[in-house]
Length: 172
Image 1 (cartoon, rainbow, N blue to C red):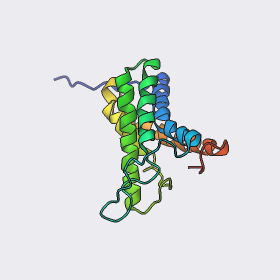
Image 2 (tube, rainbow, N blue to C red):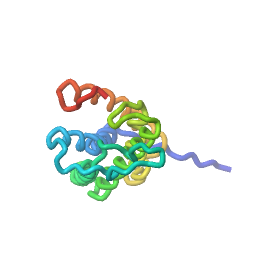
Image 3 (cartoon, rainbow, N blue to C red):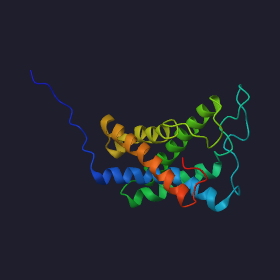
């Protein structure tokens, strides 16, 4: 009796770059928009609602503008990377959903908006879009794990760089 062995997905450097560019667009676009536009065109995503614990649902740093820019930016970038605009929009939307989940959990722990919570700040916003888009991106669980690790490490380094050049107010 022969056993079939599932072939592992080959994670090429080009695929890594493409996925990380989508993640950068989804997560960096809202930061740059805030830097350029301040509070203009930025209604809160949670509408100022509080949860049963009396804390904000998400917090003031999660805005409708940020979600729109992440989804639109990824939808426009995806065809340049060889993917459909729909995959890009889905990637951006799932990234923002993961980011909103992180914010919700951070508020429950009393972490203020834009406050640091290592790993929770990065993992949901990359894991959710990778998981939802895994078939279209040709990813298996091992490739997703590698990309999550690369994203977490890269986002920590990029945040420090963006702080140094004045784009971010904090080095995280």
